[in-house]
Length: 172
Image 1 (cartoon, rainbow, N blue to C red):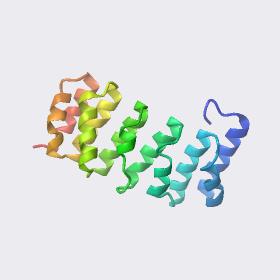
Image 2: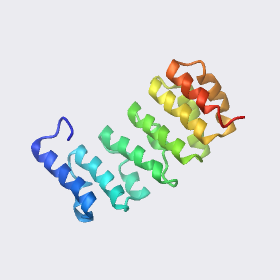
Image 3: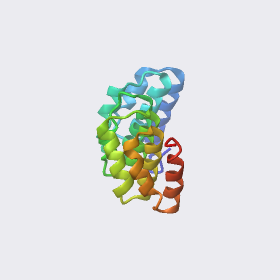
């Protein structure tokens, strides 16, 4: 339950979660249109649990007003190689960008535009968590074009330096 959920919202959210475990797709799909973000977020996870989540469904929620929903979309986007993570890498919320960067690393093969954005995030983003996730993604992707950004990250804050050193592993 989200800290801001009323008892009624918590009840709807719980019903969606249970529906995801019991196979009630219709109830899960109703949850996608709920006015409360915690219910929509749970409905996306429930669709995934049911095995019926699709990239087009995720795309609908990339512009959701709530950061939790967009972050969940970024997380679930890791499962779909066809899902374009670029809009989420440009999100105003660092937690969404961080999760989108992680998902890019799970994809391992990305478009040139996504690779360019990860390089930019690694070298210029103001949020250390975003830089750390981006450099890790560049290492997982292993494209030579990201090498300069990974090397530059070796001079960043300690957590980012550690990720950068690990990200160098594919580049023997």
